[in-house]
Image 1: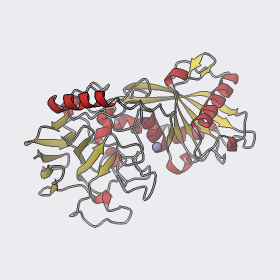
Image 2 (image 1 turned 180 degrees about the horizontal axis):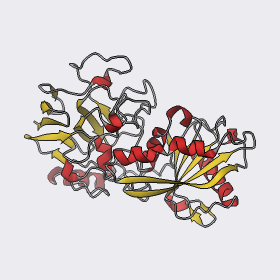
Image 3 (image 1 turned 135 degrees about the vertical axis):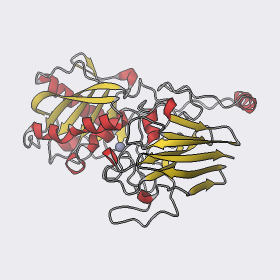
Image 4 (image 1 turned 60 degrees about the vertical axis):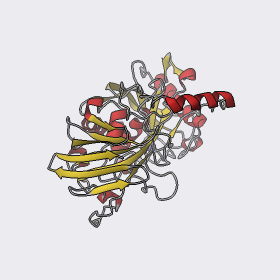
Amino acid sequence: MRFSIRRTRRPLALPPLLAFVMLAVLAVVPAERAQAVNGSTSPCALRGRGNAVDEGQNTDYTQFLNPLGTKKIGVVYVDFPDMAGAGDVADYYNLLSPAANWVWDASYGKTWLNMRTTLNRWVRMPSASGTYGFPSPTYQQHSRYVTDALKAAAGGGADLSGYDMFYIVSTAHSQVSRSTAWFGTPSALPVVNGTRIRWAVTFGTDMWHWGHKVAAHETAHAFGAPDLYAFSGDSHQYTSGWDLMGYLGGRAPQYFGWTSWKFGWTTDEQVVCVWQPRTQNTATLNGVEYTGGTKLLVVQTGPTTAYVAEARRKVYNDSDLCSSGVLIYKVDTSVASGQGPIRVVPNPNAAAPPSGCGTLDMAAWQPGQTFVDRAANVEFTVRSADAYNSTVNAIKW
Ligand SMILES: [Zn+2]
């Protein structure tokens, strides 16, 4: 579920004088309003690095695939000298293809994954399945895997032109154990039969465990989203079963509304932003599973930090969720993938979790409940709720 991406060079440290001048400027100029690639002009649209998977709203769509619209995805099925293709490639397609409807629903009909089989058979990789470094290939190993697969497909007669990205599906029982997203380095994209390769997901044998949601997860990496599970310690400590970027087997896999905003699925008009001190606002939040309405109530707490409230309901992609109500979480766009860029706020008055649900899965806030972070000067109160909406007041002290 991790991704491989070439690390960019760290920028040179600022000369001390320039740093001093910038500090002086920052002291008198109000906080810069973000101008995100998703078109957002909201002061709550926190910026990230842009060219890294993070929760920043300023995604660089030369590095990442713009989520909006129909994405043409060429599907390639690979086997190996040590592992001949097992079964019919159509079974692999049928396992992954429900991701299209899943993402269609998650995106409110703004993204369609148009998956097309490029060659209706296995293509043979030149090297054994254990030689590519899975489950954790280096960028070079992963690039070799992607280019080997696409060269083999092209050699077999596949036309690779016209696709936005590729799904490269390994035969079952190979040593490609883990599904991973791959990003081409914009300045050095591999070219196969005249086609420049920008984005790919390589599906491993874990797809038989996770099913189609692994395609929704990995494709969201191509869109710029980070992993929300923890790379060390308890992997569910930050978001438990909320959002499939946190847990593919989670009970509430709909993407967080914040990520939906980053993807352009949720627009500025659907976001209520509280950013000036000693202000407040009240929003009637429509469940993020439904289309339309106000989706997010955001309190900006710093250049890279915010508290976010969104409504969650037991419908559509979240039809199995553990607790309906208002989810409150912290976003920090400076926090790297796997380190907790989104952290769900626990609710001390939540009901005890039933079997199959964790404590954090029960954290949705109910009418009459108030969350206060005195250090951050933030307060949220849930005023009322029905089957579709929760009305929430937010204060920035
Ligand atoms: Zn991942």
